[in-house]
Image 1 (cartoon, rainbow, N blue to C red):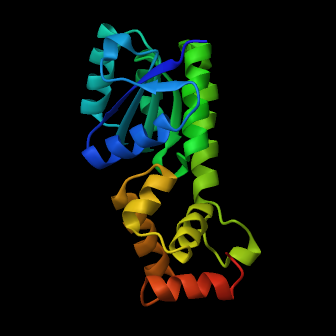
Image 2 (image 1 turned 60 degrees about the vertical axis):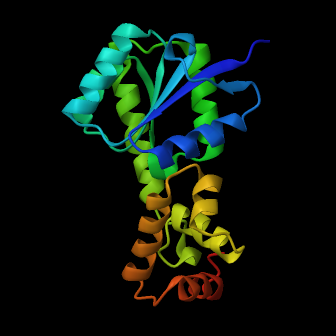
Length: 204
């Protein structure tokens, strides 16, 4: 069976490298550079604004491949424009784990482009993933989100910011923002204090 050819497009080189590295680990996937040869395009942007929508629209006019959109911010009012630009799946960057990204690409390759009458389904997908990303893991997690716990566990294993970003298929900036959020929200002094807190509370 031929491998699914994926093109990664991102606004910053760190995100681009992280997503490409993540996708290269997926069995049956091949990361290529030519959009004309792509079966699926992964497009990453911190937030979807008018410029991003215009770029998506122009890209869709040139290449008919389905898109997987990775973003921190997508206004429900912009979902129709995204779908009309051949976006078939949306992943919040904080929830874009390697497995989830690879599964979304494979599904996009197999399912083609969603029609506008499935907008409600896509909006629900965005809402559900954002809630999952922001929701605490549970009472034993001491108010830490699942992404907080993932980052803290890797920190406890001795990984640095770049290595954590590669493991979680996100940018180093995202990892730093997560760490800053943990320390400021819980009044912790530094990374070591944050790991100690997570161990002490049973979160990791």
